[in-house]
Structure formats: C-alpha cells, structure tokens
Image (cartoon, rainbow, N blue to C red; front, side, top):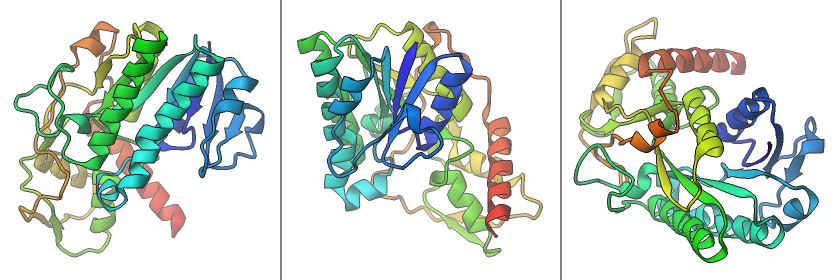
Length: 303
C-alpha cells in the first residue's frame, strides 16, 4: 500500500512512518519542516497557507493519515484561533483536496479523548456524549464532524481516532517529560491536582500498531474509534512508578489545584479496537522505563 503521513516530523508521525516502512509499505511524509534526507518522498507544507492540492495532484495514495495539528490544552486557551486552524480548518482543507483529486483515498484523522471532557461514567464508549472542557477538545470534535461530513455527503472513506494519553520516546512535553525536568532541580516538587485523577496511557509502539490495524481493517464510515489500552491509571500511581527509576529519591506533593481544561478521570472502552485485533504489548511500567531511559540519554547529550 501507499501511505501519506501528514505531520511526519511530529511525535506520532515519525514513529508511524517508521512503522509503516517496516511493514514494507511505500510511505511519503509531509510537514512544515525541511527534510534534506528524504526529500524524494517528502512534501514541504507552507505553514502559512497549508495548501494540499499539489500533493494529491502529484502522487496517488491508498491512505492518508493526518498526524498534524496542535496538541496542547493550555495553548488552545491562550491561542484558540491557532488551535482552530491547525486542528479543524486544516482537516477540511485536506479532505477537500482529496475529494477533488483522489476521492478513493482513505483518510484517518487523529483526534483526541479530549472530546469527552468529564464523562458521566467509565469506561467511555465511542457513543458517549461529547462534552469538551477546552478549546482543543472542541476543535478536535469539529475535525471529527468534518470527517463525518465528507463521508456522508461525498462518499469518502474517513474515520477519526480518539487517542487517549500517548507517551514514549520522542515526546518532549506533557506529564512525564515535565516530571523529569522538574526533578532535575533537586528541590521538592509541586504537582497539579490531587493525584486521584486518572488517565488511560498508551505507549507509542502500541499506538502506531493500533493506527495500522485501523488502516488495514477499519470500515471507514466516518466514525470515531477509541485508541487506548483500556486501563485506568491514577496519576499518583504513575508518578510514583516514573520516579522509582531515578537513582535518588524525588520529593513531591500534589497541591490540589486543577489546571483549566484538564479532565478528571478517563478510561476507554476499547472493544471496537480489540475487534480489529488490538492487544496491548507495553504496559505502563515497561513503557515508562523505556521512556525514562530515552529522556535520560537525551538530557545527557544536550549538556
């Protein structure tokens, strides 16, 4: 198969592109960063216009996977227009270009569990009511609606993947990256929340495998699919696990202050994903150990 990965320089995009190549597929990348090494199979996107027409006029693809967009709840509160453009408008532009030149190309949009907000019950099925608590969540839901629109009115094969809490090598933001950076100070650390908040973590290798399963076996009817491990992990427990890898004890406390836009408790119902053949291969402790080793090596190399 011939794949196009939009956002191929990002955290998920880099891993996905490498995985697809390992499965013997032809893979093209596209991003706003210049790539001097893989220029022959790479499209440089102009960040100011994000015009995708030339891409789909130049090459034919079986599947386009959109890994691009903003991925920061705090930034969506500070710069909502930018978040809207990156997470909603660009998805429309992509699908409209596909509609015009390659309507048979399948489209996978990476959405987010942020569309659920604070769900009334757990685990969260895909048919649960959406109630985002941040602009980021609203815009991701808009991108899902765009996918449904192009499927319903133009007969295009689309789907959206509601990714829960992804982590792994290459991610230089969010919880575990921040925990490492704070621990470097050697002083007691204040953490947001109570520690009783929960997330459903998925390691990057499992995540790209899940995306591949959808690409191979999904029915592409404009629907959304939960991408997670189906395991609820309390923040206090994953912080304790992560800091257990450090040579010296790390002192920290939860201050009870909640950040705007952060949901309380998440765990996904992944029965749809399991029906496609998914089974987690990296549980949290093992995945965090790999991530910790990568961060430590990266930190030493930067000194």
